[in-house]
Length: 148
Image (cartoon, rainbow, N blue to C red):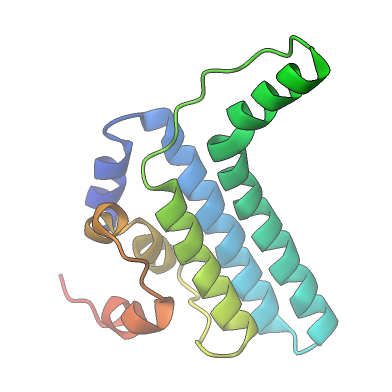
């Protein structure tokens, strides 16, 4: 299922697959690091870093042209407006990844130690294109007990 989800996702623009992989890897690592410590300050740092990275990616792709266009208009500058394609489902997988990290931070779900299972949660294509956002707690047991 994971392989097919990744193939489906990359069908339209294969080079944008790296974004879902980066988002997944950052949140996966943050979950592992938070699981490894009970220090609230460190856990908050891991949460902040992962949230900043994935929301930063989302903001860049969704709002870069808007920001630069307004800066050019207000300041009468000529910064180039890059033609950036909005990656398929970036909002869905960003917020799904964030629900996982936040739930691990709050001790509401157990950390997923398998990156491939976590990536399956993030990239599950029926969920990715149909919505709505599903929290990790709703699918964790189904992912762990899958039989192929």
